[in-house]
Image (cartoon, rainbow, N blue to C red):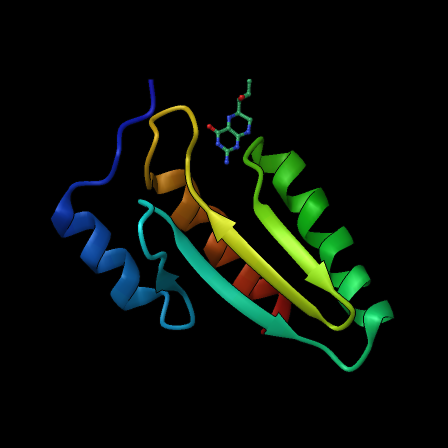
Length: 96
Ligand SMILES: C[C@H](O)[C@H](O)[C@H]1CNC2=NC(N)=NC(=O)C2=N1
């Protein structure tokens, strides 16, 4: 069973992932993305979807035209885990 991050691990993760914010009211992190148009937003979502499948870890997300919002949390432990940090790092690398 996957473990929730401790407070120390959580803080270290948030410090490292500077573009991600803690989600208000949930043990989760979120990041908002803005692209030039829908096509670029959708292309990004496709790439994230493939990443999510390889990690067997899936985002909660929304898309409105050129904007994408991603929330990461781990349902299996009802909170933030190392799996969320791993997926967030991989998403950031897609854009680097
Ligand atoms: C059976 C399967 O491996 C699990 O249900 C995975 C799938 N993707 C998941 N994604 C997320 N975000 N949290 C999970 O706990 C989770 N669990």
